[in-house]
Amino acid sequence: MRDHPIPPVTEPLQYRAIGIVRGIYKPYEQDQITRGHLIDTNGLEIEAVVLGRVLTLMRRHLDLNKPHLWVVYPRCREADHLHLQIAGIWEPSTLEKNKLDIDSPNKSGRDFEIPCDELPEGDDYFSIRGELIYTKPDTEDLVLKVRQRSRTDGSRPLPFKLNLKGRISIEYLRHFVSLKVRRHENQLFLEEQKVIGPLPNRGSNKRRGGKKSVIRKSGNKQSQGL
Image (cartoon, one colour):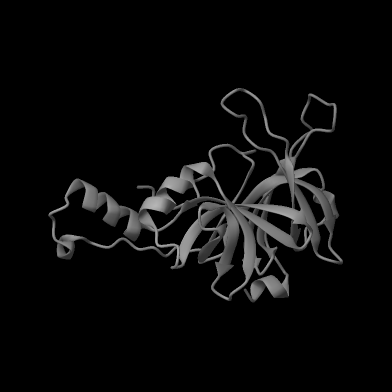
């Protein structure tokens, strides 16, 4: 089993938007669990959908009345309205216990060493990588464009935009950035930024001369308190 739900970056310009949220998933209808709410530890309800590959795991192995640490893809339908796509679960203790029950049903639970379910980044951590297409430092508004991988049939889904809160200088517009982000209620707040480099102008096939990567801690007091 991998030791972290968010895989390491393998390419300098690798787009992604992935995070972890702890909560109870409550479907709108018990016989149709693909749509519902993720209720966090503070009782906040966040709209969520369950991707197909997680359904079998949820139906067979998870107690949906208990909180779990979900691996999610964030989306923003409105500036302050977060929507989550549930792509997996990070709960090694449950997954390894289920595997043990299948492989060795007669083995005593006392011989089973429970893996740790905690992560060093803590709950509500997100890794966002994409193109900075809007920044207004005065109001701490940011918008990133994230491109998705091609499907198995060769088609490529349309890119999507994510609204975040934080300060990034306007000089980095149309640059590729890597952000460490923290969820607070229905918004994502910048904690750390790394500017990878400029992206080519629209219609240009040549990349402009790149700048060195820049890593900065967010000065946002609100995000520091999370």
